[in-house]
Image (cartoon, rainbow, N blue to C red; front, side, top):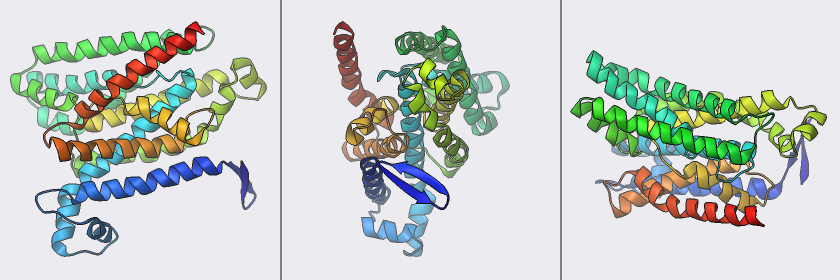
Amino acid sequence: MKVVAVGPARFRVRPRVVGVAVGAFALLVLVSAVNIGMGSSHIGVLDVLETLLGGGTARERGIIFDLRLPRTLTGVLVGAALGLSGALFQSLARNPLASPDVLGITWGAGAATVAVIVVGGYRGQVSGAVGAVGMPVAGLVGGLVAGVLLYALSWRRGIDGYRMVLIGIGLSAIGYNTVYWLLTIGDVNDAARAVTWIVGSLSDASWAAVGPVLLALVTLVPVTLVLGHTIGGLQFGDETARGLGIRVDAARGTLLLLGAGLAAVATSAAGPITFVALATPQIALRLTRSPQPPLVGSMVIGALLTVSADLLTRLVIPDLPVGVLTAILGAPYLIFLFVRSRREARA
């Protein structure tokens, strides 16, 4: 570990952690350029990068900025939010199974968003306006409510990771079944629209979708990274953390709400893209060999995984939503985590 001085401030930096984040970011730029260049009119990687930096022809600028950039940019922002959210939850619970998908945060946001889609159209005939304005807000509120319930039901003189996961699975089941109940009572057209959304897709992403998630990340990410320094102290247990001067309950509750907010914003933008938040922190943990998932590394790798999954679906099955692919790839990984956790518990 090295100490870097910037004026009077000093920062402790681990070269391997920085190297992994920089390498993942370079890959993210490359994969994003390939993804943007794909389509009926192919544009080379170098031409895409040149256009993004202000060059390119008028035709290339029109294709990239008006048609293709919103999809890839939404994938980058959604993946970054999910990666950071997963790193927060897994660090707080000290459990690799703790992610917004498993803990019910994603489905809480999903149930609130589907309620806006279905009830707005069914009762008020204003689904268009409600859908444009209310979906991001509803997703954020639904995710935060699920996060508050998770914290309140899990707290027993402290947070136990195993208890949090069990309660989260229950909340996830409630949210999941609420979504499908809402689909049964809604108008056919609104239900079809909701079904398209809940599979998790970037195909309909537009600048209108980019704005809310970008604004939320600009607000939430700096706060999360500043408060993230308390996670290291919380790893040693409540008594030790209090001895280090950390207000344990306030720090844990705030970080949990930030994680829920990040997952909810991502879900409201593109639907439930599952397993990104589950797998990303563990990949970053192993690459950096850190004692806990690195926040910045998880954020960059989350963005890289999401855009790579979107690119893969476009190459193999163009109409396949990215959320279906991440679910297919993530299911074996979840089974692996369950088996490993059971072996560790027996040991």
